[in-house]
Length: 120
Image (cartoon, rainbow, N blue to C red; front, side, top):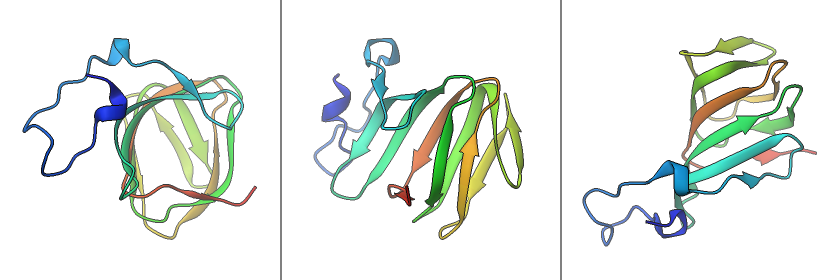
């Protein structure tokens, strides 16, 4: 099933299986950061994404409008509060602000209830 059709609502099937290998990597507006949107509800802003960051990639200052959850599969990424390494998880409270970066590159699974607000 195509990722663009992944809209979790009452009309969606009980289970929607995603062949992640068939979902294309898409560039984000941030250099060195790509993602595969695995699920997205455009009406609410909720989404799940597999994100791939190149070594040295950085996200500028942004606010988490709602809780954000991230599980790092490979590599690591950091912010002013610490470093999240492969096999570990970090969540950020609504209203929190930070910039984030990776020195070595990383692959992560990210869960967004609402899109972040960027200040760049």
